[in-house]
Image (tube, rainbow, N blue to C red; front, side, top):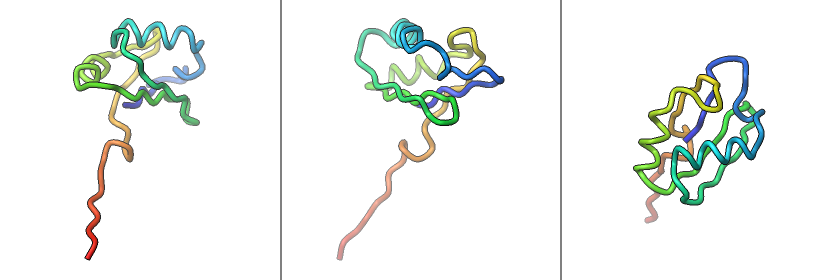
Length: 83
């Protein structure tokens, strides 16, 4: 999932400690991977559908208005066939 800022303030510019603390409060204590993207967004690797629902429900993160959406290329699969 990708957390994207709606305004000029970027979530990836915030303290990594605050990002981790707030994500733990939303998603629980399960280990998650967070990557800062060049766009200033955060990519969050989740462990369950329950976490995806919780994260998808947020409208603000660290007092910044955000949108949460699936990553465009990582959340898809391509089928290959060999003959």
